[in-house]
Length: 84
Image (cartoon, rainbow, N blue to C red; front, side, top):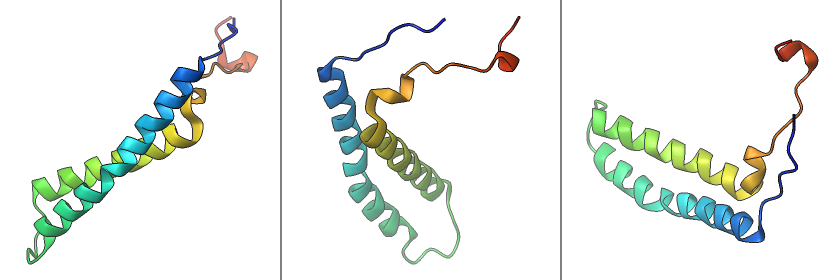
């Protein structure tokens, strides 16, 4: 059963601003990753962690910026995917 889900305008703006904030963190993360990787031939756990954080911030930031609250909008499933 689907409910009539309508987010308020404050939620729409807030989630998109959160997406922008995630994207804004990419600049310092990228600079820190460049500083860590400069002159080191091997990859450390810190570099991998920072790269993973940058990937998550970029992916989540773009999803929130473009979709906003529609990421949680209910969708109708086909009958074959629901329990009978």
